Image 1 (cartoon, rainbow, N blue to C red):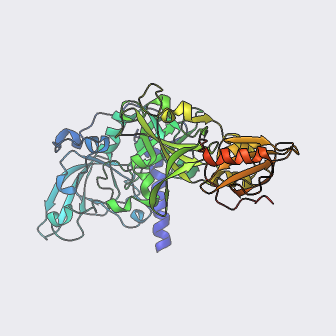
Image 2: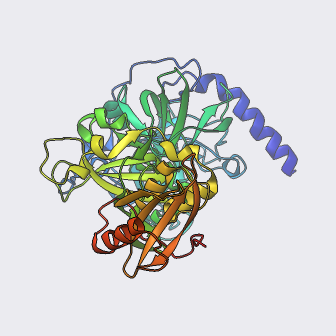
Image 3: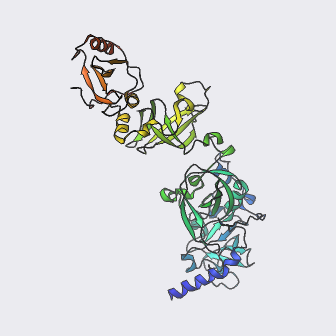
Length: 473
């Protein structure tokens, strides 16, 4: 019996597929045919909004509980697999169940609710598609008991959100905010394929139609290469059947702001600055950044020539003309944050200027070994480093000398000692280690260097030694 019901449901879907494609609310990522949106009565025309919210979503996509539904609100029947077995509507003329498969993609207009003599409650609709009247019978309780919840009427996707999204978003540029989207695989069905696409890429809205009951607005976008993909998103969440706390983790992308961000007047970072998104850069100087670890945010000193990928650029609301970069380190994938300005004339430290602090590309450090890059990040000097890599790790030496036997040494003062780095004739670190002031200075030149190093403050852009470098014998 169950197999027969599934077969019949499948046949009903197939029979109505061609008719379903006639509505301009059904759009596809392939060979999308653009048509004009028919004028229709929506909730925005008949319901006065509360105090106007300031955010885009709250201002334009108000949530309507069933208690607030007004006659004229339009919905589309989008049955899921379960709905093809358990029918939602009854024909008002015959009181017989109407196949959800047959009603697929039919447009229902809300006509109010009705208390019946038997104590049940009917939610009434007029079908624009077949010109018949239908009702949904509440499973239990009064209308007031039921209408404040999130259950709503099964199978119905709210078209008010679709119409409003078309009005506001068609042909608009957006920025992708997730990597997970979909493409259609069936013109006459609902088949799709999950695809990955980079975050923070500029795309353009090409079509908007109906998605699913839970995520009613299907937004098809196209990138600069003509590649199309889509996301089904919940805008107002009217009749979506999901609680607010269900829109997190994996479902976060099914909110508009989870998949897209505005450009133009609605976005907080200009299009010019957006060109830096997903670019690889390196800091030309050691600098302070903030980083999160163990759930806490702390300030850290980042050595120069560290490679990053710019994940996000957000306007800093506490500092005029400043932006917060979200940076993902190339090597460790660790996330850092840095406040910068793109305006060189902005008052503030020169280091805050993006063009001064950052260079494009991964920087010289990417040509080093993993062991050397680790030592550079930790402010250590190890054998095998070049002179440039030593400067990356601990900065420029305050004293450089050549011994009588032709060995080049760089000296770095510490609190109670001097870090001495010895190089081969080819400029490669041979030995590096701490030496107590005055210990082992066998030549006048070395003694003078030690005295100078001991009384000179290090002004380079490096870090203090961790004390585990190879000691000089």
